[in-house]
Length: 462
Image 1 (cartoon, rainbow, N blue to C red):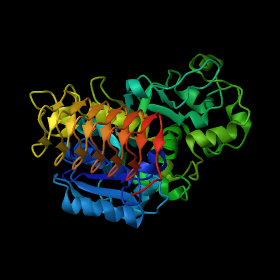
Image 2 (cartoon, rainbow, N blue to C red; image 1 turned 30 degrees about the horizontal axis):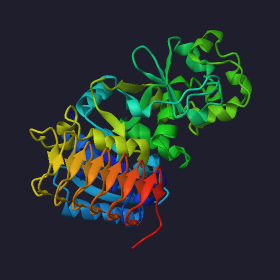
Image 3 (spheres, helix red, strand yellow; image 1 turned 180 degrees about the vertical axis):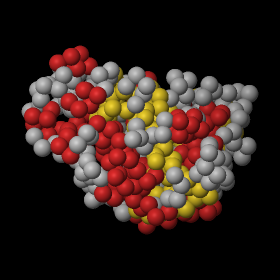
């Protein structure tokens, strides 16, 4: 990297509702363990591998900031120098940048979501950003097999991210399923100036970015705090303003601006019929508060918004939901073909990752594709297959774990069979219980001899 002291921002905000009872006030989502580390560690390691060592970790509220500060002080062993910053409790990703605005002193800044696990080279992303003199360089990756969009005839793909690319990978527009009501509408100025356009819905927004600091912070400041999300507000606005030829184009004054956009564009899901298009375009591209003769508009217009497409071989996934994302990433981290460089430690000759402090009883086996954390105790005749067992967990004798995640401090008593399930931190699963495709909440106690299928077990506490 060209900067002698590049800066990075990790936003560890929100998402707790998607993890439900696994998360409490003492365990913000991005502090949940993946493999041997809390998930935010992977974002920090992405920065560290690119020598981005001056890092701001932005948390939602003072309580969560305090939890992350404790982890940084007591447990973090990496090379990053981390300053934990508290944003408002309801902060979104763009708010995270506002929270550190006065602290950003470099020309460009690297920004990464605290739930991202990737081996994409940030050095390559940075080099692309500098070479193209971009306002933003955004990493997109092919979706994992377990994270494909749901398609039905006559309906927009469920969960899709819409990415419009030029042949040289300039980002022409970005949006999600909330921006599309059966028809994706595109603006005439863009179609006129960028006639070659590919619309893709098979990509994941990795929420890994390099931004030109002044351009982005000026835009956020002058938006009067209307922009909340980097993915949904800021990046679409940066892409859109490349085609803001005048205040008239920018203002979204009438529906007529978007009618008859380009009949040929219908082959790539563009359509010229634009009922309610003013509202739609404002949602997709962001409402501008900066006029066409403003110096900052000229600055944005001179810098493209660039999409960096991660190589097919790269690992790139976000633990944004409990199922399938967190569950599948936890298991993939233990797989022999992808895990060692992501976990930061070598696997064993048995193609698994078992901490040296694990106690393993007689005739117990830990198969390939497993992670067993420090201080875990396995009783006699246990079988652990394609599973993750968090630090300090206790697994009784005769237990079978298959395709499951048992989190830190949980207790699984003798004779249990747990398959395709997640057992939360400090939960207790009673003797002889059978669980298939279940979620056991943090600190929940499952009675002895129970048999559950596809259940979420919560609220009952010690």
